[in-house]
Image 1 (cartoon, one colour):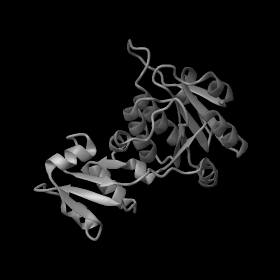
Image 2: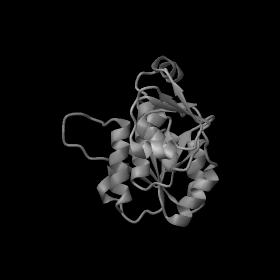
Image 3: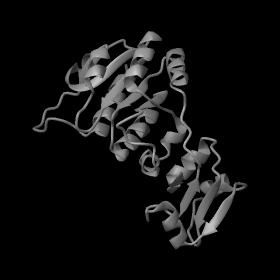
Image 4: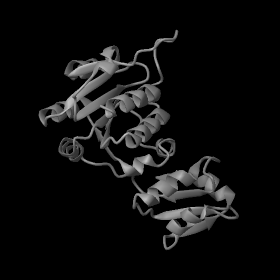
Length: 231
């Protein structure tokens, strides 16, 4: 996989991950702290045309990296670490918009979530756009691809709570003392699947006071993560 963008590359290197190759556009100027992190790694100078072709975009900011296949984690590692450290997990149930996935991963890392579990079917894969939208946060958090319903069953069996975000839920501000927990955010159109709703210990909603009926998945998920992580 070719990832790109200055923040993405910076966060990737900050996390300790070493890519196969880093591509730098000839003539581009880079911050000293980024160049210091690149020093000693396999870096190649390329033309603007070459880096445009490598990344299939002009939004690369003059830098890209070949990271090979994106490395995911076993869900058991995420479950065990969540229970042991009393830290939450984000579960994405059939989200198909890569930008929503990236934005939610970024929020999960920012709010101290231990990992992210993404549906193994009917869901957006990890792509360069997901990585870019996460602003590199994806390199600082464990990501697993797994059946979400099975994950919830295993997580609850290990001693965790499950919280589903849905319009039919109770006011999220009323939730107390539910750590550690797995927060499930549903797909853009259908929302949370019925099986996940039935498995959830608590179904919550974000109260709204305007005329619209719902929020974008990544916005709703970000608000929910902030409110629940503050418990």
